[in-house]
Length: 254
Ligand code: NAD
Image (cartoon, rainbow, N blue to C red; front, side, top):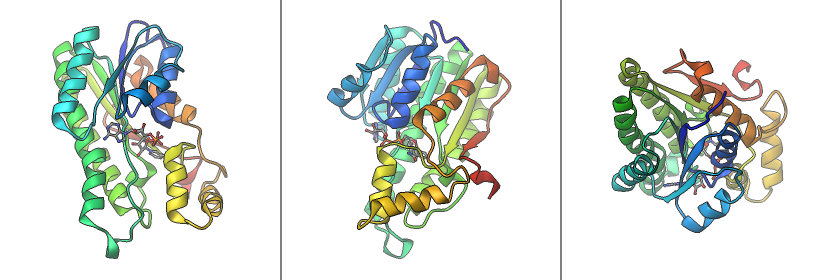
């Protein structure tokens, strides 16, 4: 699965899944463009990647102008975009629907839905023109199941699945594939936030309960998600588009 000379653009690249994915692509020889909110954090993360070509770009993916800019800067710098890992996301506040605030709903949908749309809007323009490309959107098992206290997040990830399917239909005739990954709990900062949101008095107990709901009895590592991202972006997946892969230690069977 060589990505020698391929340009891979990743959002949320300073976070657990994004950084692991950047490292996996770097191992395959890819040139990287990494997007996240804070330049200092992003550069620190980028310095841990063993790659010669790494472009770091600060952007809030939820703002259309900033999304347009990170795509344009990547195209300007490398001349093309072969792979887009549309990954930045937030979990939001833990609120039951009876108490949910407009602010929380909007905050989550802004990043997880609008952010995914804006990135795709400008990346697909580039990929359609070059008549090739692969996109992987980060959905979640919450794009299939519900989760108490996390309805805004769950709604956003169901939306990501729908966006993925429509984008795949729009891209197919141009040789552009669009898929999504749907992980269950992954060992990143996001899960640490979810554990303490779910049980502020005993986050460790929350973690145990979540692990117990996964047949394999553990969270996935970010690297396991990265492996699927790399596969779906590769020529080995040349006839796979418009679908999403649950990667959940057997939870799909429950
Ligand atoms: P993380 O919190 O470790 O990383 C998320 C990264 O996205 C952070 O670096 C953050 O700064 C960045 N980000 C957030 N909002 C942004 C914005 N508006 N613009 C630019 N960057 C922004 O979380 P993670 O676990 O690596 O999550 C990555 C993706 O995986 C998310 O879409 C998340 O919903 C999804 N996911 C995570 C899990 C899990 O259990 N961790 C499970 C399923 C899906």
